[in-house]
Amino acid sequence: MAVRKESVNFTGALGDTLAARIDRPVGAVRGFALFAHCFTCSKDLAAARRIADGLAERGIAVLRFDFTGLGHSDGEFANTSFASNIDDLVAAADWMRVEHQAPAILIGHSLGGAAVLAAAARIPEVKGVATIGAPADPSHVVHNFAGRVADIERDGEAEVELAGRRFRVRREFLEALKDHALEATVAKLRRDLLIFHAPLDQTVGIDNATLLFRAARHPKSFVSLDKADHLLTRPEDAGYVAAVLSGWAERLVPTVQPAAIETTAGEVVVVDAGEGLFPQWIAAGDHRLRADEPVAVGGTDSGPAPYDLLLAALGTCTNMTIKMYADRKGWRLDRLETRLRHDRVHAEDCADCETREGMVDRIERRIALDGPLDATQRAKLLEIAGKCPVHRTLHNQIRVVTSLADEG
Image (cartoon, rainbow, N blue to C red; front, side):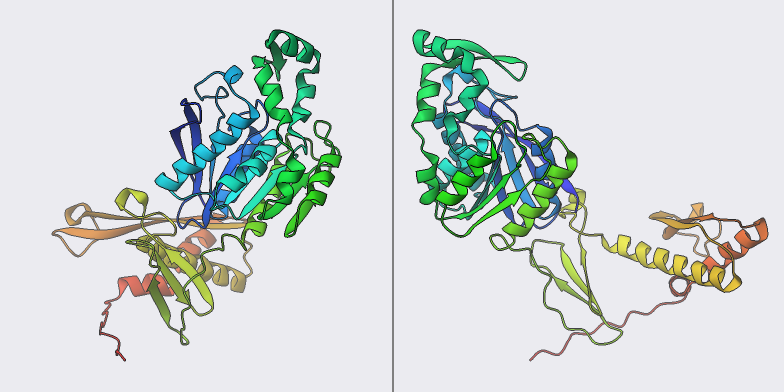
């Protein structure tokens, strides 16, 4: 499934404009998730981007945003605290509720994981919370600037260097971290909990996952991210997290299932999907397909358009016919590819058309044949392409007999 990306803004807890991005499936949305990034990271961290893409490909739209003073968001990091991070998450959920749909799932990476655990109780629509490398104690992040803690406590604030950037940290930030006992929070979560943690995590040790898991009540799950690092820098680790998250979320935000359609042998049935103007479900035997129209004409692009399906029918029939003929002749084909395009042209511009006035439909078909074939063999296969059944049907006179189905 393709992914559509949209940049948006909303007002954070401290009144600043926060930069966000929505990664959503092209087509039906199972539900929305809200993603909180790691300490001093941003929404554009590679792992966050890959996880959001993976979920969107599986039908879950994801909002990820930069906390106040980070990334592309306005505001001063020095004015923030762990409490304000939680408030930013609640503000994001409030915005989603108005503009789209409140999040059913909260996902947090590192300190973002601690934040979503604390925020869940304030977002009533949340059904599940997932953490990735989250600390059991938010004050764990202090080790990132341990050498300046005494200065911060003595002077009220100090400048620290984190991940190559300089930030001003105030005493209130440290105090807010101490005020949140996550084990007690997790014990009262009353949501499905999924904990991801890497045994080799050198930033937040695996013992943190143990503490959170023991404190939580069922339903709860733990997934070990073998060989992964804290930031999930390997694409396959982020992809694995997205895949497991999607499966776990299936109970919370079920996949939109094709309509129950009964067919008889040789019959194709098309049923309106009930999701707007254009989406349709197609039943052909035991197979289910989806059709839609592009966004440019008012659709949601959740499936091929009608003419795309027509071209697909011609293309598949072309390849099947060529392949059968080549196989019967014992001719080797290393690659067979047919590309098609539909257009409407003026009849006067069509040299081989019988119609000389108005517009005519024109299908351009380009066939690629790779293999040890001579010119005569290639010419014969091109000729055979014109004899595929769908090709002949399109060139024959066609009558479509339409009637109303019996009601009752």
